[in-house]
Image (cartoon, rainbow, N blue to C red; front, side, top):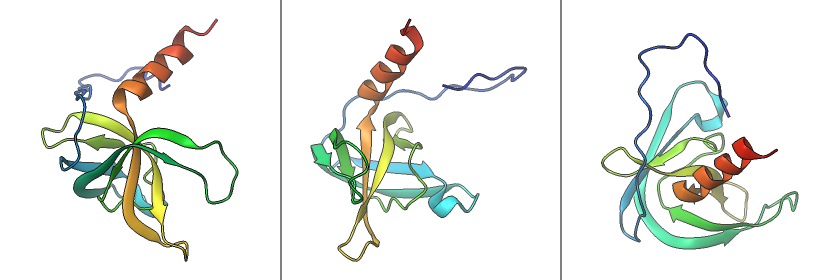
Length: 125
């Protein structure tokens, strides 16, 4: 959660709905932590995808949107948007080859699931 004080004139992101296989999406982030915004676009290739960490350090992620949109390390936490600029997901992972290099696939938590998780955090006693 982020709280801003004294910020004015900021527009909120528009929230999108569901995506389908074949829909074009783009992920916005900070590839490799280099400081400049990065953007990768491409089609959704699979829905309800489950993935596991290559290091075994985290629980499997389930229910993800998989897109062939060139997500690079460092872009996690950024929005995945549809062609109208509406947020449809939050990027959480980059696909890797067997050699450990990015394979051009990105994975995102659907926005409805991300918003539900944020709500649970905000109302937790």
